[in-house]
Amino acid sequence: MPDIPVIATQIAVLLLSLSVHESAHAYAANRFGDPTAKLLGRITLNPIKHMDLFGTLLLPALLLLARSPVVFGWAKPVPVNTLNFRNRLRDTAWVSAAGPLSNLALMVVGFVLLKAFVRLGHLALEHPLVTIALYLLVINAVLFLFNLIPLPPLDGASVIAGFISPKFGELVDRLGPFSFLILIALLWTGVFSVVFRTFISIVLTWI
Image (tube, rainbow, N blue to C red; front, side, top):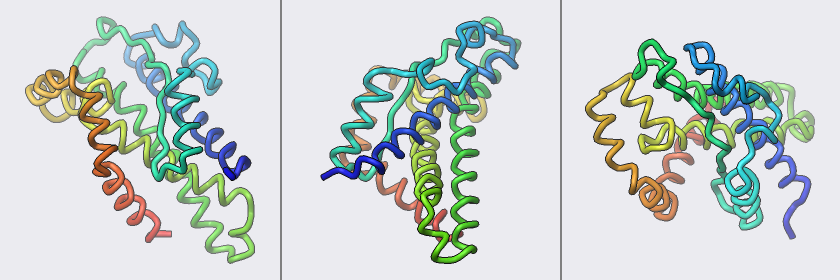
C-alpha cells in the first residue's frame, strides 16, 4: 500500500520546487528586459500558473506510485522573447541558469534544515519537518542535475552556449530532435540515477 501522506508531501514539495524554478526563469527574463512572462503572470508561486497536466501531475504521481528511485517532472515552459535582450546569447544563458540555481537554493535550504535537526538529536529527527526537509533536498537535487543536462529544451543547453562555448551550443542544438530518446536512455540505463545517487551521497556525508 502506498503511503498517501508521504506521497502527498512529495507532490507538494515538487509543486513548490517547479513553481520556484519557473518563477525564477520569468523573473530573470524580466530583469534582462523581456516582460513577456511577467505580463502572463508567471512570476508567482501559484502552481496552477505553471502546471503541465502530464509533466507536473501525471508523471510524478505514476513514478511515486511505482516507487521509482528518481521522481521528476516539468512545468509549462516560461515564454521568453530573446529579441528584447541586449545580449541575446549571454542573457538567454542567465535566464536559463536561473531555474536550476533556484533549485540549488531550495536544496541548500533542505540541507541546512536537516543539519539543524541532526544537531538537535534523535527526538528532533522524528519531527514531520524532517521529512519535508529531506524531500526539499532530494527533489531539488534531481531538478538541479536534470535541468543541467546539456540537451535542448533543458536549461543546460542554453547555459553551455552562453557561458562555455557557442560552437558547442550549436552542436548541442543539432541533437534537439533526439533529445527525448537520449534522456529516456539516460534514465532507463540508470546513468542518471548513478550520477544522482553519487551526488546525494556526497551531500548527505556533510550532514
